[in-house]
Image (cartoon, rainbow, N blue to C red; front, side, top):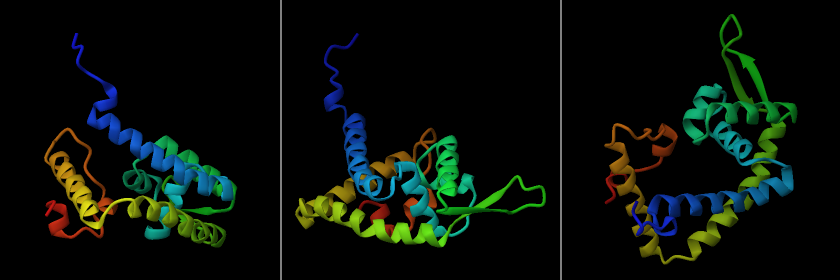
Length: 168
């Protein structure tokens, strides 16, 4: 059994911890003001960008498993933040969309989320930040070439230039 392995220095673990810390920090903002969970926030954010979509489409874009997305949608529907409409004749496929109340709450949260993001971005010199983003894209590229890795969603790719995708 290897004795030189330390989880605290293992890159995947460090990335997961940082991601979780940032996500939890953001959840303070939307949890305090609107009693939303991380999953519910991600669903609202996705719907604000994509309009009416299925749970499957949301699942593919927000990096959450389908049951968690389904629970988030059910809770958001109960709060009047999203609505469901049948897409097919038998009603098995439904499209989820934001209600006016959902759009208003999302609009209220976005400036707070941007403020948290701004604090993180301001802590790094612009050239270092460019390096961080370049390295992130290089790691994505490694995973994009790995047949066993889950592919990035189109939402993850939207807004990235070809040069950014190559890590240039």
